[in-house]
Amino acid sequence: MIGDKKVLFSGMQATGNLTLGNYLGALKNWVSLSDEYECFYSVVDMHSITIRQDPAILRKRARALLTLYIAAGLDPEKNCIYYQSHVSGHAELAWILNCFTYMGELNRMTQFKDKAAKHADNINAGLFTYPVLMAADILLYQADVVPVGIDQMQHLELTRDLAQRFNGIYGDVFTIPEAYIGKVGAKIMSLQDPSKKMSKSDENPNGSIYLMDDPDTIRRKCKRAVTDSLGEFRYSDEQPGLHNLIDIFCACTNRTPKDVVSEFSGSGYGQFKEAVGEAVVSVLDPLQKRVAELEKDKSYIDSVIKNNAEKANYYAQKTLRKVQKKVGFPEKIR
Ligand code: TYM
Image 1 (tube, rainbow, N blue to C red):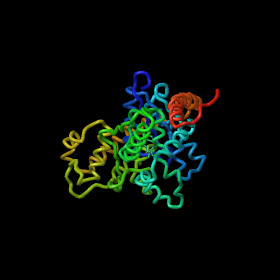
Image 2 (cartoon, rainbow, N blue to C red):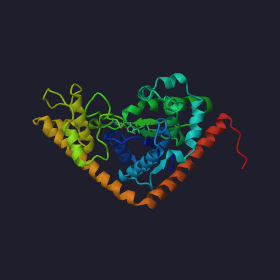
Image 3 (spheres, rainbow, N blue to C red):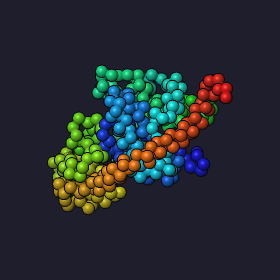
Image 4 (cartoon, rainbow, N blue to C red):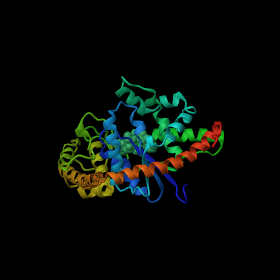
């Protein structure tokens, strides 16, 4: 708790072009939860270097992502929006937690297996221990709730296990966090292959809607989305392409699948795809305009970066001091 509020932590990587999946699965929920909780939203740039990055591009993308958080509606006066690399406590706690994590646990992580297969020439130790850094992110702020898409659930389970293990040895040190998964949009699939999640690293750009795609590109991608030949307008797992489009439509318009099915039951897929395209444009177009506006105000963004890093450091240090003492590190002489 901070004051009378529970704590929320979440983060996003500044790698690749963010997709509609990132927005609907995470960022949109962050905004809706931000009044209720004391929130920490990090641009997790330390996670990004588990895959080789061009330094100038990473820096640019990290800033663009931080700006996007604000553009999406997160008020940086109320929400702590900061770069992970500006708070050294993340790395310090990650080291300690590494010493409480079993190799077997990390070996089971499906995201590690996927990324190792994709980057076979660079299977580094950071990629392997990535989930421990993620656990440190969350536990450092004593987060109660962590809004994420379904793909991060396994990492969150590990975080809970580590926190419980640590508490079991040393007493109540960490708050045990809960995942928050949105009702719709928690797993947005590729428009070209609805058995795969929509991903920034997809080689086929038509599978993903990028947050910075222009309206015509968005409409075209929706129009070309893969559906099926059944020709029936249902919300069913047997029609994964249509199911995904209904999820996207619902998440963009705050409607329920039941409602949408009854409205479009007499229409063809083509007509619905057009409606999906318009719904996505109506969400992303204003977002892009706000990003462009904010990007002009360099000193404002700089002040957000500075002030919020200080705030994050303050809370991080509080937890870190407690943990260091528990594991037996000698106290600093001040
Ligand atoms: P990242 O950067 O891959 O994704 C950021 C958020 O977007 C969600 N997401 C999706 N949701 C629905 N459908 C999709 N197709 C989709 N693709 C991505 C993700 O679930 C995530 O919530 N390891 C994390 C970043 C991280 C983090 C943390 C998150 C680091 N530390 C602490 C929460 C708490 C990651 O790579 O997310």
